[in-house]
Amino acid sequence: MKIRDFLMEDWLISNRRKVKYNLGESGVADYYLHELLRMCNLDAGDLLKIRLEDELTYGSDFLRGEIARTYRNIDPGSVLVTTGTSEGIFILFNLLLKRGDEVVTGLPGFQSLYEVPRALGCRVKYIRLCGENEYLFDADDLKRLITGKTKLIIINNPHNPSGALLPEDTIKNIISIAKENNINIIFDEHYRFLPIDDGLRIRSACEIDDYAICTGSIVKCFGLMGLRVGWLVTNKPLLERCRSFKDYTTHTLSPLSDFLAAHALKARDTILSKNLRFIRKNHVLLTDFVARHSDTLSFIAPKAGVVSFIKYNHAMPSDEFAGRLIKKEGVFVLPGSSFEVGSHFRLGYGIKSEDFKPALDRLSRFLTEIK
Ligand SMILES: Cc1ncc(COP(=O)(O)O)c(C=O)c1O
Image (cartoon, rainbow, N blue to C red; front, side, top):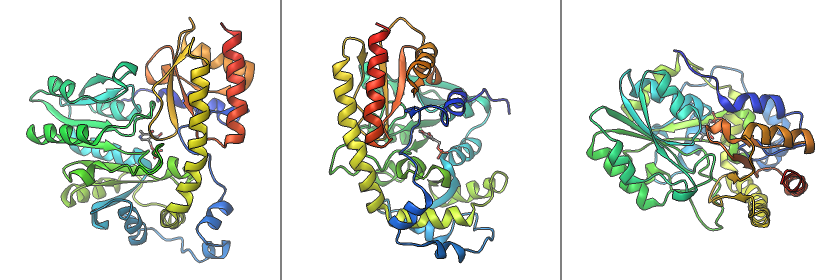
């Protein structure tokens, strides 16, 4: 398999540990292990009892049960634990696609979602997502792109990099188009646990219709990136094929990650409400910030997750914009080029509010300077 470089990774690797303010990430600020243990009512002694054996390839019953409980009407037997969402989608693409097939997905989008199908020899057709359509995948556009060769529709909801959230009616509509045309459909729901509206619970597409194959993760929403725990939810025959494919990738998960992820999910109300408190505060700061700079910046305010995609009207390529901002102010945002889009940057607002405010102040100063 020949695959292009992952465009955002050079930026992340070069800057993540060096800059003063890292707004380039797409997750909630990471917790220390002692903080996680406290939130889960565990202590270090509980870790000493973990046996360092090979976990079940499916993930432990405890973890699968806790994942299933985050959905309504999904049983643990429909869940396969994977190493991040990345492994889940990689396995699914390998099993559902072959050379010459066509897939439809949105652009900009998380690169794996189109790069892996492309590397497998598929033709990828894109629905252009932008401010004008509020980054929403459109059912009529989808119908126009479908041919007899279309084998898979790939949707990321909530959306990275914009934070857009598809209305349930659109999800239903898209799933019925997929069904009518006998096309598989995957929803990558990495950011499902972080709605910006207080009181909103984001329903998974597989709760709406079990025809949808869904992937999920705790790494970004929970602030537990280092655990690398993701999953997929699908029908039993496909799940068994995925499990068998997984024998060739990571095979099993570390029992430490499995144990901690299961407990984190069990304590999800505590962890997520803590995260949502500061994310929602940052969201207000961010919306005010963009409004204050409306002469040069615009965006569609995110509805979920911790990333926003901001358009600027300075005559400067996005790599130069991001590079100069790092050099001048020690603030890292991801250039639009990482998503194959010019004049934009992705700004993550998952860092602690006490850091977010000074980071925005520095970004403000930079924007004034380059005017
Ligand atoms: C939409 C989307 N899908 C998949 C992934 C990969 O997830 P993981 O880090 O759990 O492998 C990411 C990571 O940022 C993402 O944003």
